[in-house]
Image (cartoon, rainbow, N blue to C red):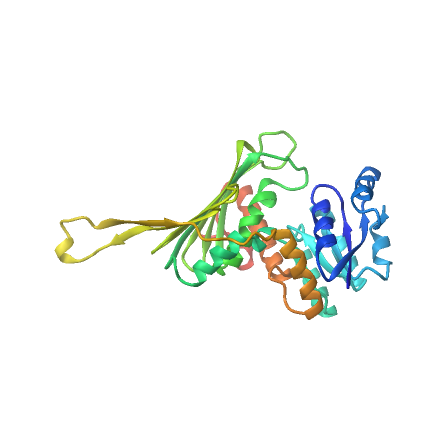
Length: 342
């Protein structure tokens, strides 16, 4: 039975605590938070769990085998590094660290000590994303041309990260998992409309090794919440609307047929194919419950997590490149050594 301590009981910590309390093969041992109000809320929901105002005490508890970190990004490295050095397995909220250098250090420490390091990229464990990966892996879409995402809302303005690190981070992880094609370069533009705060809206373009392109639109200053992804292929297309109660994924048998035949030179060079639309059945498993169970399984079996430290590091590298491009007003940044693209 894996003993888990949740560190941080603000916005996301209560969700992690609930899921670990409900997951077979583990038990919630402790919750740590510096806020007395947060601990009071935790006491009502988890009356038999040890409550701590200092996260370091969790690492001294022999009943704690693993920690789930849900604290501000600036604290991720210190807490995760101390936990790994104390011999604890780590699940850390996205993004994994503030810098790729910190991410590499965590990855090296986890591998050297034989510990599980997993990043809380929750969407990767959603049934909708699993279905998209299944369809793409089965070549149902044909050659993937593009990934287009809109994640906007009248949002929670954050002080320590910009909108890219808060919202675009989801799609960067999904891209790695679903398309399995690393970006070669990224171009990003963003702006802040609130003095003294990070950028609250941004547009990113990522150029992938496969030849596909990804466009991400993220915004904390939109009148309504939108969570939509379009994936276009040579044979079929996918629309994922995460706010739909049912039919979150729709597959369209639509596309274009190109011709370069001499006999067709005076006719249409492009013809449109309009076929059926279908909505595949999706499992009803809660993504965070699936993620918690996967974390426990990886600890018990030693297998590599789907969203392991390597994927977490790749995402942080992409975030750094996007932030650097944004500072240069959209000049593309390559991923090989973080060079400016020519």
